[in-house]
Image (tube, rainbow, N blue to C red; front, side, top):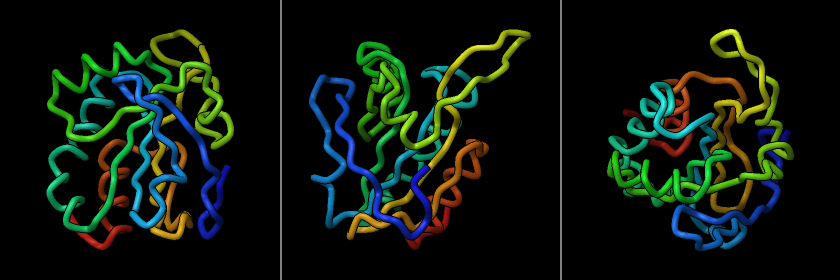
Length: 154
């Protein structure tokens, strides 16, 4: 997993519209990455809407928000539209980035065990350095810590 203080490994993933987003292209801006297990589920809605509701503050800090999951582009587009999410959602269906960032694991839910994204977040500064992040975090804490890391509080 990328460590706080290290340079964030680059990745390229398609967004909800099929446009490829390259992390490296965002250098010069702060970047908030958040990983969510499944679009349009209660915890994921809370996390995504927390970033949506804080988006004006995030924008004033010259930051970009990217949500990442293993959902398809079509699922992400529908979710983005349903909840008016003002940022890109990235699709990592083969979970290459999620595994590289150690945000993919075996999870248990409702008496089932399966592999899935693990709720996480990272904040990357304009130089590409990770300034905060955690794998396995609550929806609310991911938003609060991300806002603190970019210099704004909710």
